Length: 117
Image 1 (cartoon, rainbow, N blue to C red):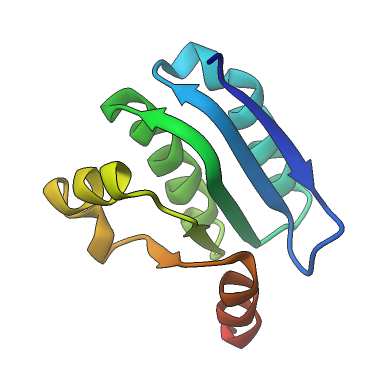
Image 2: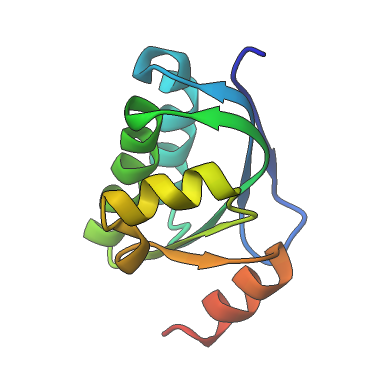
């Protein structure tokens, strides 16, 4: 399944909903551009929902890490939710599970972000 994404701005914080297979950075250029625009327009807290993401490899993980780095450089926070078992293993192997906050749901992610200064 090809990679796509949607933006849910109706939630407490902007939510990037990833779908399909994220295998290459060039597939996600539009996502990166949207995230950069959000950060430039003072969205300091973003949720990435991975519920509909079927597969991600290290290049795809690099896309998420790129967004995380940019938002942290802007003194913001990123939370990922609905992490499937395969991605969880990839995060553990790369030790990113200690760096990027993960929650089981959007609600938990929003609660965490609301508590952050």
